[in-house]
Length: 353
Image 1 (cartoon, rainbow, N blue to C red):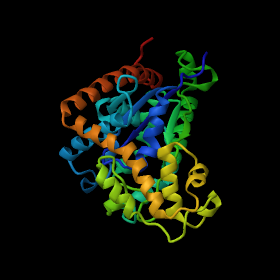
Image 2 (cartoon, rainbow, N blue to C red; image 1 turned 180 degrees about the vertical axis):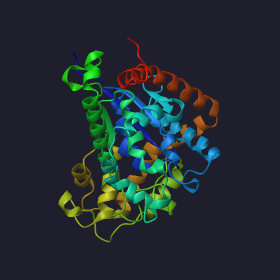
Image 3 (tube, rainbow, N blue to C red; image 1 turned 30 degrees about the vertical axis):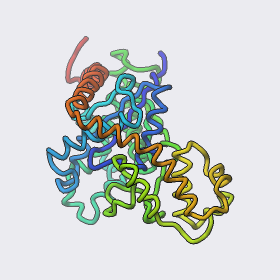
C-alpha cells in the first residue's frame, strides 16, 4: 500500500494575545506550508483549560481569546478556504481518541515529560489531571487526522516524541486486528509516526527586556514582547525601549556571542526581513543601536501593523469568525470521523464487518 498522504497539524492555546514570537516561530511557517501541504490549524481550547481559572480566565475570556487567536491566524495569512481553521472542542474525536490513547500510553512515559514539571511547579499535587495528561491529548489531536508533519518549537519536541511512541504502540498492540481489517498502510501500521518540522525563520524570539529569556505571554511586563494586536506607535515604542548593550553591532555572527540582546534584535530583523543574521550584520555591522533600531521599527511596523489592523477588522464581526470556526470544525470532523470509526473497530467498540 502507499505511504501516508502528507498532512500538517498544529495549534496554539487561546490563553492570551499572540505575540511576535508566535508569528516568527510559527505563523510565518504555517502560511508557507499551505503551498505544499494539506494543513489543519487548530485553536486548542481544550488544552487551555488544563490550568487554573486564573490562567485561562473563565468561559467568557476563553470565547474571546479563541476568536482572537483565530483572527490572528487569518490576519497573518492562513487562508480558511485553503486550510482548516477550527477550535478543538468542536470535534468530539479529540476527546474520544485521547481516552483510547490513555490506555496505550504508559505512566513512565508521562512521568518523564519535563513541561508538566515546569508548569506544575512545586505544588504538583494540586495540578489538574488534564495538565498531566496534556501530551496524550496532543497525540490525539495529531493522530485523529493522521497528520504526518507537525511544526513544533523546542519545548514541544518531547511531546511529539511521545506521540510517535503512542502511535507505534497502538500499531503494535493491535497489529493483528489492523491486518485482519486491512486498515494498515503496508508495514507502517494504522497511524503514521509524525515528523517534527522546526518552526519559522526565527524559532526562538527572546524577551525585549532580557535576551536570555524567551518572549512569553506570561511575562508581567508588556514591554517584553510585541503583541500582534499592538498598533504602529506601540510597536515603535517597544522596540526603541528594548534592552541593548553599549557596543556597536558586529560585522559577523561570531561577534554576537555573549550579547543576548543584540543577537535577539538581529534575529528579529532577520526573521521579519527573510534574511540571514549574516546578511543583516553585513548591512548594519558597525552601526550603533539607535540607527539599527530605527530600521527595525520601520520593518516591524510595515510587517506587523497590517496584521493588527486586520485583526481589529475581523474581531469587529465575531459572527464571521464563528462561522469560519464552525465551517472548519465541519471539515475537520469529516476527516476525523472515519478515522475514529476505524479506531473503534480496531479496539472492538464496534464491528462493521
